[in-house]
Image (cartoon, rainbow, N blue to C red; front, side, top):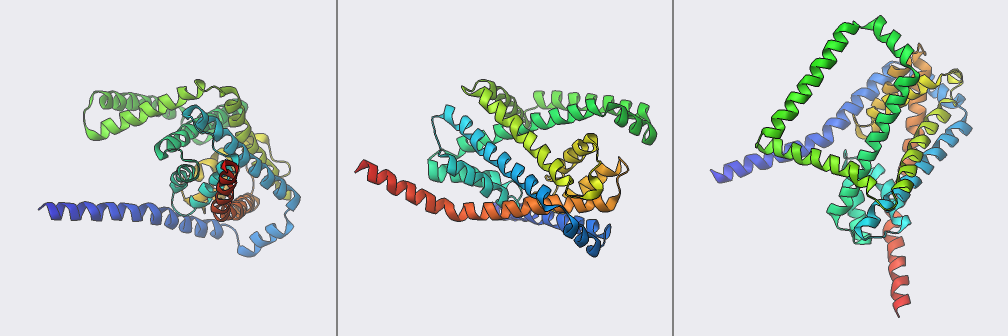
Length: 336
């Protein structure tokens, strides 16, 4: 009986692991097909030919700067733990993580903590904990961008919602959702079920992670880099949009809503494969922007940033062991 139970559990875990890899890739393939059904290949190729590559290059530079800043910010989080990783290892682990995320969703974060553990002797659980805290900081800033967008585009968003939806039903739905969330949280708080304990542990870690940022010795440099990273992301998005001639007159509201939509799409598939251009098209369509330049821009920015990650992520994975062997030899020579 125990053998059968063990066998069933093993099959379930194996199936779950396979689905985590295959399902996002499958969704990505479907979305790529759907996206390309909205614009002909020849038309898309023409947009790539006509694109201004100076703006694309500037967008890539903003992307690179954001990753450098992210790697530098990570050092502020490991320092209170008693570790001082080398910046080169931090930067190469960031690029490696982004590349690995294209294969298995969220595997990049695990790889990043593993690289730090392997080359800088930072315990895996502590390294991974800093990455979770980092993601919490990113989530807060993303929420900030959404609030700024709502403030700047309130009249437009309000008019759009009034025209498309019944506002009374939306308000009733929001109130009902808030009551539901409150009720579920209260049940979880009082429950002793294993899943409830896991959720409570996760929420506790989330709250601790937020407040741990303000307890850091270098909290202001950390906050500065956090803001700087997201400013670079928005500039990357805006600069690349200028590569497409039809988008030169695009409003900042469209840029921000397109950016938010595209950012969320990355979680849908591995590295936003297929979902990224469609998310931009969906956001831009609210502003009456034609689908062809919207989709073309989506593919141009996704391709340029992906190419950068493949190149720098691949070089990082190759150079990591070489760099650390050289660093180890230098350390041994100094001791002698």
